[in-house]
Length: 500
Image (cartoon, rainbow, N blue to C red; front, side):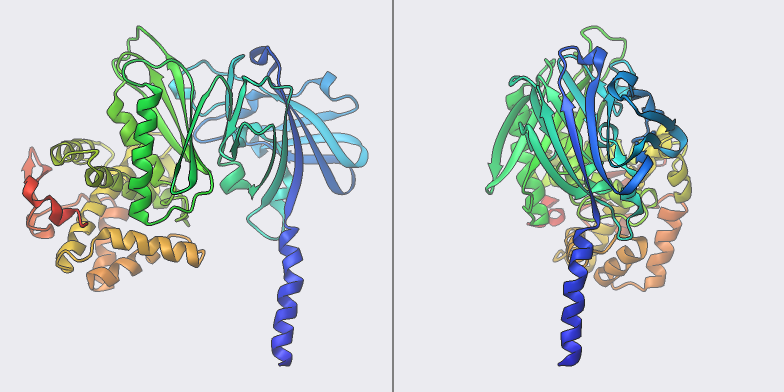
C-alpha cells in the first residue's frame, strides 16, 4: 500500500510540470487597406521568465523548399521605439535588444517578396484583397519554446485579428471567421504545420457524421472548376478515406484552394498543381488557365487527405528516409481507394497506374538512387523527389498481392495499414522501417531475414523490382513492353483485388 501511494503521488506531482511545458504568446494582427504595400502588421507580446535586456526569437528562413523567407519579414523602426534588432538568418533568429524588463512586445510585418508563380507557392502571399501564409512564415515565436526540458514544444497562441472588415474573411486550419483565437498546439507539428488565409475567400461547409468540414476557395477559375463541383468532390472523398481507415476522429477539417497564378494565354501547355497536408486539413495551389484538368483535383484530394493518417496520425521517425512509405504508400492508396469508390474505373486505374507509376518510374534516370540520396536531394531534384512516390507505390502493390495470395483473399495490405495506425495512435509509436517489417512479417509468415533482404535491396539500395506473374494474384498479369512492366486485369476479376 505504501508503494502504491508513492506512485500516485508521483503522478499528481508530475501533471503540473507537463501542463507548464508550453509558452504563451499574444499576437495582434492588423488590417490595412493597402496590405500589399504595408504588409500584414503583427504585434507580438511575451512574458519572460526573468528580467532581461535582450531576447531571442525564432523565425524560419527556409520553409518547405523555399529559401530566404527572412526577406518577407520587415521590422520598421517607427513601429518599435526604444528597441534594436539583429537578424541572424542562418540561425533562424531575431535578437531583440530592449530595456531590462520581464515583458517584451514588438511589431513586425510580413510582405510578399515574389511574383505570383507556382514555383514560389510556399512563400508568403500578401495582396490588398487576400493573404495566404503558412503558420511557420507568419508567426515569430520565442526561442524559449525550443529550450523546454519536455519536448515536443507546445504553444498557446492568443491571436486577435484587428480592424478586419466583415467581408474580409479570416480562415485557417484552426478555425473560421474567428476574430479572436486561442490555439493550444504542438509548435512544430501543428502550429507551424498550418495555413492562415484571409480576404476574398468563399467558404462552404458541411458535416460528415456530425463532424464539420470546410472548403475555402478564391479566384475565378477556368474550365469546369466550379465551386459546387469541387465541393461535391470533397463530399465524396471524405467518406472514402475515413471509411477505409475506420476513423472519423476529426473535430475540425478544412481544404483551402488558391490559384498560384491565373493566365488566359500561356506558353505553358498544362497545369501545375501542388497539394500539401497541414494540421486539420490540406491546401491546394494551382496554376489557373485553359488547360485546367479536373482529374488532377480528384487525385490531389485523395492523395493529400491520405496524409491525415500517413504522416499525420502515423508519424515518421525518419522523415525523408521514410518517404518510400509516407509518399509511396499514400500514392498507392490514392489509386486504390479511388478505384474502390468508383472515382476510377478499372480501365482508368490500369491506364493511370501503368503510366504514372510504372512507366514514369522506369523512365526516371535517377530511379536507382539509394534511399540516403533521397534524403539529401529530395528538395533539389524533381527526378529524385519522385523516386519515393513511385518506388513505394510499386512496393505496396507487390506487398498487397503477396498478402492476398498468402491469406487466400482474406487479408490484404489494408489490414496492415489499419494495424499500423492502431499501434501508432494507441502506443504513441513512431513509424520506422523495422517496425513496418515486424508487422508485415506476421501477415506473410516469411522469414524476417528474407523479407529484410528484399526490403534492403529494393527500397534502401534502389535495385529495380522484378515484377513477375508468380508474385501476384492470378487475376493480375504482367507483360513487359520495352523492358517496362505493364499490369493487366479483366473487369470480372476486380473483386479479388478490392476486398469488400
